[in-house]
Image (cartoon, rainbow, N blue to C red; front, top):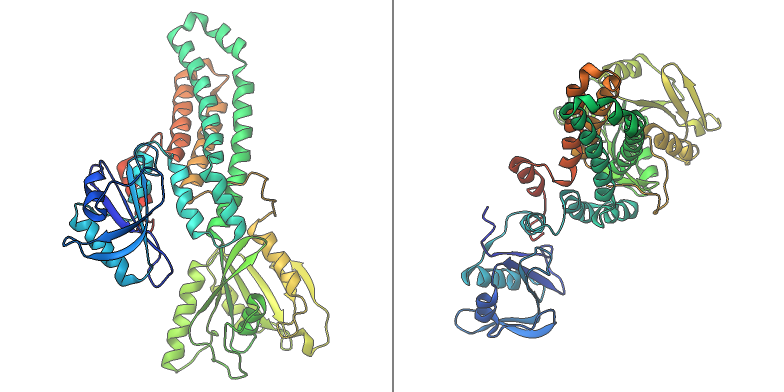
Length: 451
């Protein structure tokens, strides 16, 4: 995509609304503004204007905002046309902008230009999408911290510290006769350990932030009529799934998202697993198997009135290796039992009643424990981290560990310098100081149109 083109897009969601916005960005938007408005709007001033087509007929009437470069979101001239939010009106207004010299913006292209024009670094640019996609208020606040540059500032501090160490090591290579003094005066080993400690703290915060962003996928699995749908409804607080006493009622996966202490949990109620000749039910069971393969955690529901049967153990043994499992013994209300948690070598067991709600809080607590979430207040410094951020931090951690192994070996100075260089590159890739076009294309293609 060209960075010199004038781009335009509808910046508000599709559908009906009181207000709709068409955003335009590029170099020298004055001719385009003159064509649509009949005048050059005042800078940074909301003006009531008529939007006209190529024949001078009025398309709509609304508010115009003009932000000249470089003081705009993209760093270019930006024009926003705020009209009535009908889809037909928005399409007409966008078509008029395209006819006046703009082209349709690609997904994320406005924010990409903000990055390329140094208005945002890469981590901040990604946080724009994270704010839009946030499923919980905690996730939104965490994303805003990243947009304000707190995550980037932390990464910059680490990069600078690693760079300083690299300078010292390079000095020992360039001036070997001064090597002892350089290393003794710099206390390099202590500084390297300090950086590693700081990096570990950032990685911990980033992992917690990643939970806020991505959430966890929890699949409810079991034989027919063990109460999967009842438990789904109890956890979500609404009748999300149909509940009957007829085995095989659930034919397809039912998906709902709940908020667990700020972490989005994506619950999937699945078809009961059993042998069947019903064609439709077979399809549902196949989809259950597919959901299990993608899950982060499984709740295996068992009828406590019957106990664990060979069929339940067969389901458990069919799970992918390494998938965390909580065995949930449902229907304790029919046995007049009290809710409880039991831990054995096979993992946690929770005894509850989806019908009455007894033991549901125990399940919530165990879910929170297994996913590794520690509740934080809004000001405790979590960062909205993506998978690539975690990969870069983990790579930097590994490089620094290798650097620590050779710090005391004078014959390994070149290897030490190389490990520090690679750690620096990994950290710099988070903010975009070091990036490739393919990475940028992958990141910004996931943005919504108009942002």
